[in-house]
Image 1 (tube, rainbow, N blue to C red):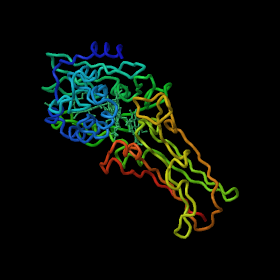
Image 2: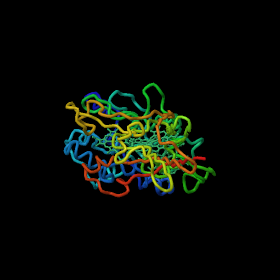
Image 3: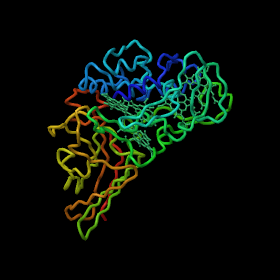
Image 4: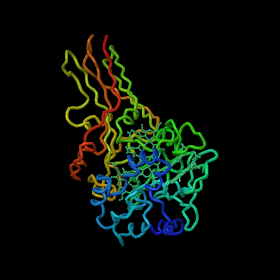
Length: 372
Ligand code: HEC
Ligand code: HEC
Ligand code: HEC
Ligand code: HEC
Ligand code: HEC
């Protein structure tokens, strides 16, 4: 931790002038609107109920999470150490992962505990916004420059790569260690028609959108996996093939629960299903990470020293589950669907999270197979 703080104090010029998110709206209206709907804007403990409740369960006093959830705070270090408390009247804190913060990241420093963003923010000079435009136009507010990390998605890895807790256990990871980051920007910032700025003097025809849809979006959850069904009459075997279509593990965060539910219908009645009450009855079709503490009990990330359950699937990987099912006949139909919980119902209950959009399951792809 000491080393990280040393880096923070060296690399962040926290006193530098800060342009809050509202000030970008004047020119970048559409992007501003998209961003304010995104989880980046809602990442602070003032706007994300789930984050706030986990934070309070972990540590009421210190806010070490601020490093990624409220990175633009001027008193980041004091918040992380618990010397100061979050303040809901401070725009830099309310802005969460803000426009200004993201676009001032010059480089990403790799560290074992978690990566660190290196900011270019400096006091007293017109700020430079980095991104990926060819020949950016001039603006009164800021200079603009292109930077490779906004093209190869390295800019995402300052917060999204991996994280160790204070016990040295890695509680989340987006991708395998050996592989370079996938093209996050391509999937999470799809292009839309129009310019990025209201005067659009450069006559641009498309811009990178900023909603950063993910696990909260039914539209995105539909794209998470592909399911294929195959039944073999000879062996009475049903094969359910699950392919991870994303650029990362299916489970990137231990709050989630995702699974495939499969059942067979004959004359409108269910004659077989892969589980009755809990998806965990069929571990192979369930994607979940349950962390355990030193007494081998299920625990929150801060106390974890290992996995109690680790059912995950790498980027682009495929898994085939074989089921022995009753002999199927003409007219029978097999159904399979992807079910995704933002918060595992067990954890939601424990933390008393009640917002319906957060605790209800999101249904992804649905496949069916008619037996001839
Ligand atoms: C007074 C108008 C104005 C304001 C306010 C403004 N910008 Fe810009 N911005 C521009 C113009 C003009 C461009 C160039 C657009 C082009 O070339 O298509 C631009 C380009 C950018 C780029 C692209 C840089 C590149 O090289 O690819 C980023 C990123 C950006 N602005 C971020 C911001 C952020 C963050 C804020 C708020 C803190 C902000 N802007 C406020 C006018 C503005
Ligand atoms: C999580 C980091 C992040 C946040 C937050 C963010 N941006 Fe961006 N922005 C990017 C990246 C990465 C690109 C480059 C995408 C590309 O070129 O495909 C980009 C591109 C842009 C561009 C150029 C778009 C184009 O394709 O013409 C503008 C302008 C811009 N951002 C402004 C803003 C403003 C204004 C906000 C807040 C309202 C904001 N950004 C918030 C990461 C971010
Ligand atoms: C190294 C950066 C980093 C740190 C430090 C960090 N987080 Fe996060 N957190 C993230 C990222 C990135 C995500 C989005 C991950 C995902 O969805 O896969 C996230 C997501 C979450 C979520 C899920 C939110 C949701 O909307 O469902 C919770 C809860 C959470 N973090 C809690 C915490 C708590 C509590 C702390 C401090 C004890 C913390 N985080 C520290 C980067 C971080
Ligand atoms: C400064 C840290 C930071 C950077 C840089 C960053 N993110 Fe995030 N991102 C977060 C945090 C924190 C969350 C979780 C917010 C929450 O749920 O409370 C998040 C959430 C997300 C989500 C999940 C949305 C959802 O619905 O659950 C996606 C997708 C995402 N980020 C993609 C990206 C991409 C792509 C980039 C690079 C262009 C990027 N992020 C850069 C911190 C960051
Ligand atoms: C091939 C497309 C694709 C690529 C590449 C990709 N993602 Fe995703 N990602 C998705 C889809 C689809 C979802 C939504 C489904 C889900 O969350 O289960 C998602 C979900 C997420 C989430 C929310 C996951 C959760 O459970 O909280 C985060 C955070 C995220 N992506 C970040 C990233 C980052 C960072 C990168 C680059 C390293 C990246 N993504 C690359 C398609 C992609």
